[in-house]
Amino acid sequence: MKMSVSLDGFVADFNDQKDWLFKTGDEQSLEWSVDKIRQAGLIIMGRKSFETMAPYWPTATGPFAKPMNEISKAVFTQKGFAGIQRSVEQSPAGASWTEARIFDGDLAEAIRELKAEPGKPIVALGGAGFMQSLIATGLIDEYHLAIHPVALGSGLQIFTGLKIPLYLKLGEVKIFPKGIVAKTYHV
Image 1 (cartoon, rainbow, N blue to C red):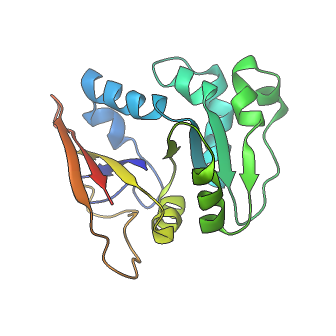
Image 2 (tube, rainbow, N blue to C red):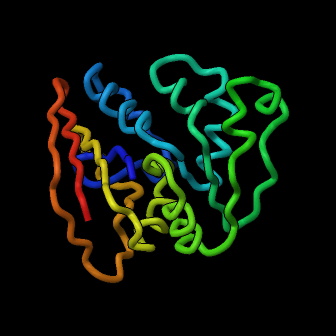
């Protein structure tokens, strides 16, 4: 899982806004983030994030665009999925979005199925709800958290609702010029 988190543990405000991400980053933290995505063989996310990202990335520029458009996707939904807009389907960069695998059954079963396939790592991106569900499966091997130097005071968290404590081992720490601290934790 790759996620940006505020200093006080929030991934977004209650309106799911994340504008604070862009005020605290720098070139080095951006490269770290892009590299974590670039290493993926598959990007997984929930339906809401997918529906937001699919129309955006095929026409986007910048360092994230290439890996976001080239790496295969899987989308998880509990409320059905109607597909994406035709404009995305007609874009060459949109192929990984239009060919995304859709999973609408048991999340843990689907994750076990994907993890059994050969290939590069699976990277989970997306919103708090999907991440909470994913954490609850107990099937995340690594947590890549970019902790931003901002306190939001309230908002959406990903570690709420744990049934039992989640013990992690710190594997790596990187400190970036504008104060982001990237931590990799192993289960």
